[in-house]
Picture 1 (cartoon, rainbow, N blue to C red):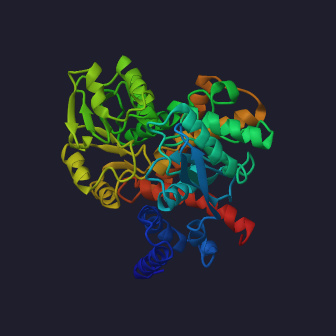
Picture 2 (cartoon, rainbow, N blue to C red):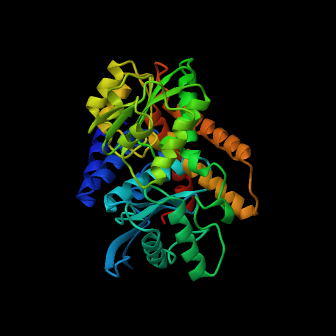
Picture 3 (cartoon, rainbow, N blue to C red):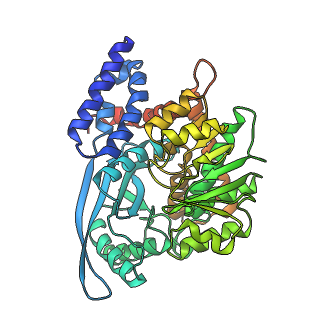
Length: 452
């Protein structure tokens, strides 16, 4: 097939997605990023022609939207909206987080569920892709309010999930407290103790190192990327955004491997700590998050030598490695230009789609090592998969066992992305590699199962 024909196919496909999903910019952005690399690959595989595989992957198998009424501490009735997007179950039960945040809407959850399909495929574990959540904001709510909301949310959600159907996990706004309340209500209604949620507490079926897993996986992936240019993390300066569980795991593992993290960030701006964030400073990040406060500036209360830059992002700081770990579209073209100009050699996404398409293209054109979140942040869902396995066999593995399996999975993901993404000049296009590697397994399963 000629290049102009492939370009036209991409254009036509994106036009259909845009027409079918109006006012869903995040979802359209995610699908577009995949289409640009996967459609040329499909053109080289006669067995995929006419099967509309990508079209089917971009349409949720099921999108559930429901009302979540609950009563606050003042006796006032509140109403939120709940969602569960069950995107694709070709290779296993739907698997993906639940997010409680005011920004949650259909577009955001469809983008996350679509990305999850590819991410879960890359882990090689038998998990399909899904995502869910609510526009409920747990910030500033009492434990009793959060419990009442979670119970109302699960009263509806429990009709659509199960250990062999859909296994949600935590995400932004859904930590150990929320998972506990959700699990309790599921058990109460369904009268069964099963591994229906991951990210559970250790006392009732959770896995060791699950809180750190996403961050650890990101760093293991970064390690593998740097090896391709004969580098390692020891002595490297790293800029990280966010300061939640993912950032905490990233910083912890970077410190362990001899790197130096110099930034964290929040909605209020970023912190630059020239001495490096290590030791008790890493523990303090957890204390900050546990306080329910998401202001990065509060880091100065304990470590006043650090500097705070209000309303700014950390990508202007000179570094060897950048790890965006906060939220979608937090790193744009101007940020990308600053990073490249300052000599950054590697950008590893820890959040879901934190870089804009323009930023990604600039990194690729500049031949900077760049990994999309669907590959590098798959350690979280991989460890959720390991938690599911432990629940199924009624055993708990040690931290060392879980960490070793996680590292092995991340090395495998890196190899698949490298093999599919290596270009003629030796540069590895991890975006292309991750999209194609993730697509192939799902596509083969869909072909085998017929038009369903």
